[in-house]
Length: 321
Image (cartoon, rainbow, N blue to C red; front, side, top):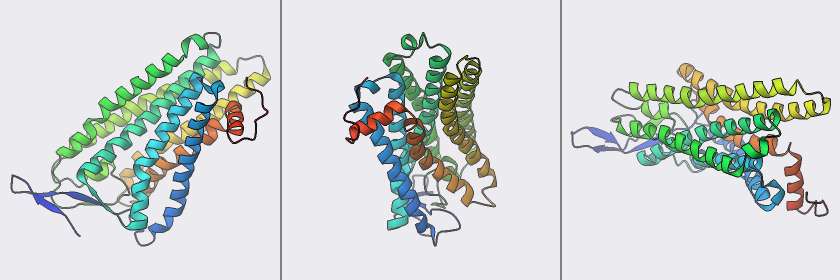
């Protein structure tokens, strides 16, 4: 093991960089996974950039619901870009080393974007709840100011809660091992290499997951339960079908996002027997939602589809509403 060490003031060895080994157990052929991962990454970049350009280009899309879609697109691009370039560099150029500061920065960014995505899902659930349950008050409640306030609130919440994660990780002493059996700097993957006690790191990681993701998930599903209850009371079969169709597409991605979070957390417990499972799920959870979100949220929205067609010149004769 090519371990890079430095001597601290206390005459103790301190690791100066980590080595990301990739997927455990399949190091010899893991580079073959780079093609599907690269395709997913470029799909996520292209689809989300297309959404942002379309929303900016089409004045009819300058509405709170589409602003939230745009913010989700930015978060998805940030999440995928935080991890995928480094993973592809590992597979294609064997660039496995990463400095401690870069690792802690990636660790912070991953947690921040994950929590931000969860927060945006909550904002979108509230938006749909007000639109369906209180349609007459929607335009006065969900405004551009509302979107700005909830976005800044989510950024402030996530920033304050995420800061301790890299700070606590940086306070640990890494004195011997520096090889991480992962493609990215995960919280538990990094701190498991520490030579001192990591109880506080594990406790804060668990508390953060339950407080942020757990509370968001509870509020999201509570909102959709109220939406479904309200939709089932509609007298119009067409309106009921349209509302349920919108909710079902949203719920599909929300279920995938939160189920994956829970599964990734649980599989860490079985990581010693099947170490590749939590690593693979962690990577896929960071790249599949950014690739799927634009398709489910945007392509099922007629206004965005029309905007796409105008943008690429296929719908020049379509009237602007």
